[in-house]
Image (cartoon, rainbow, N blue to C red; front, side, top):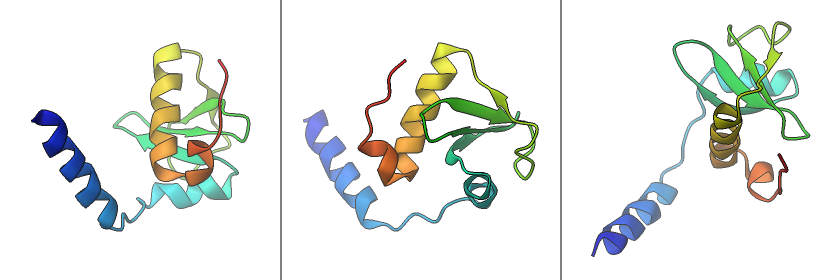
Length: 93
């Protein structure tokens, strides 16, 4: 029965229009696909699927490439939630 409640929740969640957070604009302006933000900084993907980290949401000039496989995976999953183009891509390691 858990699968049914999960399916209903996913269906209702898709009906709501999600408004992107303000830091998405800065990431998109710098040419990145926004992934997620936490208290440390902001994660985003470039056009090749590489994960990048910026300690300041508005300043992507100081962005560093992410090397940890766990953070790369999470960044890709979160970017796919926000960006339809990332949902259709097959990204390699």
